[in-house]
Length: 320
Image 1 (cartoon, one colour):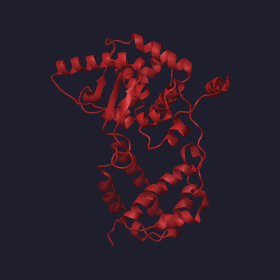
Image 2 (cartoon, helix red, strand yellow; image 1 turned 90 degrees about the vertical axis):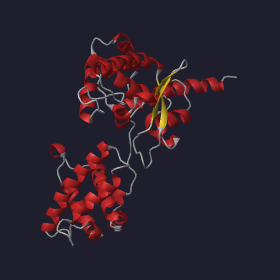
Image 3 (cartoon, rainbow, N blue to C red; image 1 turned 135 degrees about the vertical axis):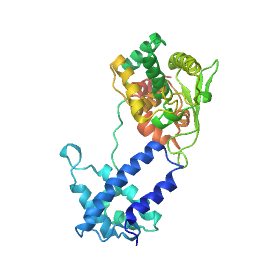
Image 4 (tube, rainbow, N blue to C red; image 1 turned 60 degrees about the vertical axis):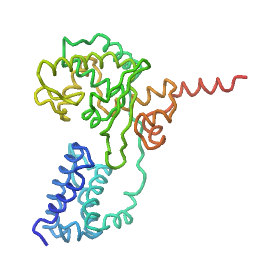
């Protein structure tokens, strides 16, 4: 057995996932494995785990790790949430399965807490007044403030097309199409590329199209003046490569401050689905535009008819 079996297994797994996971996902996995290695090494030193080799872990080893995670303080000193522990076990299972070891599955069968369904509350979306503020503000944005323009153009794809962060980062300018009927973007690199994710086309809300067009003209002029090129819709103004997660957050903050509205990509995506539903778009169409495999996910988390609309439509059906 090698001296560092856990790290060597991690390296093999990360290499295998390199071409079918988003860079941001790989960074998160790597960080989780680094923390996990330190914790498992210490548990082994204390005699609570029999080995640090994922190929030789037993279900008792997994139980010891699970018990440690339950008592480990999280942020602010609060206990680590079960959903966070589940994520650790999912990534640990990847290592074990890579070594043809099903110990995590055996432990899950012995631990009902890990197999019960979590209750998910529907998270908030933009309110009607916030949407009106967004639509109003973008009418006045021009290229005299490039940072604000870029920030609103990003919002045009986040909220205006329901893009996830990895999709906004990798969106290519040649995949945006403007027609007389509207605009849409073809997404080649999506969340879950190489596994559950599939390339798709997403409609861009018509109210967001003007600011996107203004930005794309500024973008073209900027590249011409710089004597450079970039395939990405959004790129680093210095390196001309796709933006990092941190730069996207900083860019988003500019529009947040201008709007006095706090949001992230997930809230924008939920708002996109709900906006389409509120305007009568069929759930099958919304599901396809959002890249879901079925309408269950769309209905559960992104687009459900509002109570007022449900009453109105029901009353119309009942009128003789």
